[in-house]
Structure formats: structure tokens, C-alpha cells
Amino acid sequence: MKMDTSLEITKCILCFCTPSKDNPFSNEHIIPKSIGGTVAAKLLCEKCNNKFGTTVVSKVKEDPSIRMAAHALQNDIPDLFKSIEDRQEYITKDMNGEPAMATYQKGKGFVIRSEEKQDGSLIYDTKKSEEHIKNTLKKDGLDDCEIDKQIKQLRQLPNDQCLQLSPNYSVIKNSVVSQFPALDGEFIDDKVIALIAYEFLALSFGKLICDQRFSFLRDFINSGNSSNKINIERLHAEKYGAFHRLYAEYFPDRIVVTVELFGWLVFKVSILGFTSKNDNPVIIMYLQNKDKRTLFANSLAEAKKGSFIDQCGTKLNI
Ligand SMILES: [Zn+2]
Image 1: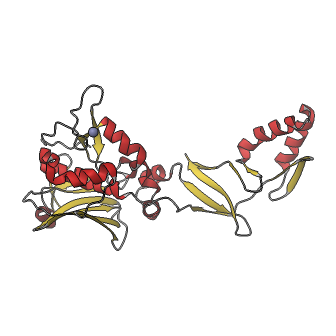
Image 2: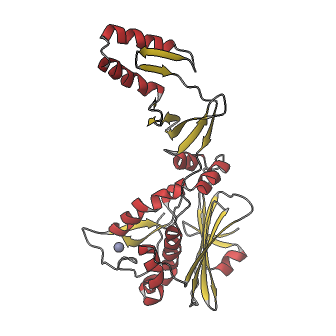
Image 3: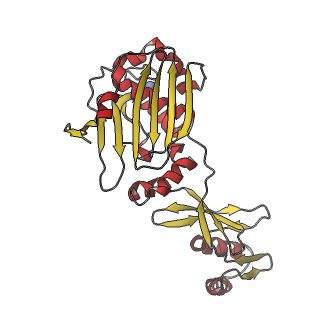
């Protein structure tokens, strides 16, 4: 959904360019769309959006904590689970419990990732392997008739048995008995968390987000230059929940933006050294297939009272 705001933001809040025909405003998802974020606003120019999209934001769904959350919630969020897991890496084990090969999810099934092992052997998906085998046997000097014979034998080959196809070339059909998500992706970059917090604050600060007070935050997001004015804590709640939540708290000496992903992953972004009397919205994005809604409260106080406005503008008490 699009945020209907009158933010008076007329330039990109990261590079300060005035969007033009060549580099227009892009409708930026404050929590990445790839993990179910629904709230978007025109805050960044296309160049900045693409820069972060291709470098850091696109990796968010590879974070092992995100994958574990999506797995835990897969019955509530089957569509999002599928799209998060699409193209993700899995590891498999053979009957001896040894790692066998890497696979990744594609559409409804799994595809084996082609790779060359240290001993020079090649791993291929069974379906893709025939073409490769035919070409190799041709190079080895076998004629078409011999190649056909070998391919027929290969198709009938039981699992885990070796077939000698030519003097230098043998093949084995590996069987796999178990498969697990490969949870070795990188954790979400702090720059992404800072960007979420910065964009979220822009919803209430409007064009004031571009002033000098936030320059250290922009510096961190743009160049990774750390500052003692920003502190990001990574915590977790007690259990997973099929929602993302964003809110800000104002203290006398700092603003703390909380980014909660899947109810469980909690990032607290403290921006030290100043405060504001702004009323910041509270946003909850429910992710369930059955009941996908985005709720807004005007302030933390309203949210605590359970007074929310749904995305169509209806006031709700929940
Ligand atoms: Zn920009």
C-alpha cells in the first residue's frame, strides 16, 4: 500500500537530489517488500533505491533468522514463505549422514546446484546431467549409438551405484535422505536497519528529516561511517508472530526506533543527542494469508489504547 502523507518531501532524503524524469522518486518500501513489507512512500530517488536494493536490501531474506522465522510461520504465511525461500540454498545429507550436495528451491521443487568438487568430480541435477554426459562421451570419441546405450543404462542405474561410462569417466546417482535450509547467509546489515529507521522517522519529520541533525545517520547509511550518536541493538522477543511492527519512542536525550520483524527479531535503533515532540505513527503489518492488513496508530499512546486506523481509513479498536 502507499502511504498517503503530506510530507512535503520534494527531494531524495539520502542524496538530496531533486527527482527528475531521468531519476524519478521511487516508491520505497520501508520494510523490504521481499520479506512482506507493505508500506511504501516516495522518499528516495530511483538511483539511491537501486543502489541499496542491489547491495544490501536484496540480501535481507538470506539472513538465517529471517529464514527461521518464515519456516516457523509457514502455515500462517504460505505465500510469503514460498517467496522468501525461492532460490534459497539447502544442504542435503546422504544415507551415511554425510553432506551430499547443495540444492535450492525453485518454484515448487528443488534444483541441485551444479558444482565441481575438490577431487574434480562434478555434481549435476539428474535432469540436466544427460546433456553434459552426452557431450563428454562425444569428446571421448564414442559414437551416437554407444552414447545412446550408455544413457539407457544410466537411466536404469539404481541409486548409489557406480557406472563406468568410458575409461576416464564414471557416474554415480546420489540419493539424498534429508534436506535442511543452509543457514549460513549473512545477518541483516546494520545499514538496512538504519535505513528502515530513517525512512520511518521521515514519515513524521517530513522534510525536516533532511536537516543537519540527521547527517550522521545519512553518513552511516550511505558510507557505513559509524558514529557514537547511533546505536543498534539486536534483541529477540519470546515467540514468532506473523507481523512486522514499527514504532518510535522519544526520550529526553534520544529517539529510539524499534523495528520488529516477524514479531520476534527486534532491532532498537537509538539516535542519541536530540529529541522531538513529534507524534510518531505506530505501524503494524499483518502478514497472514487470511488476514493481511496494515494498521496505523497516530501515536504510541493511541496504540497502547488499542486505537488503530486500518489502511482504508477506518478507525478500529483492537
Ligand atoms: Zn538519492
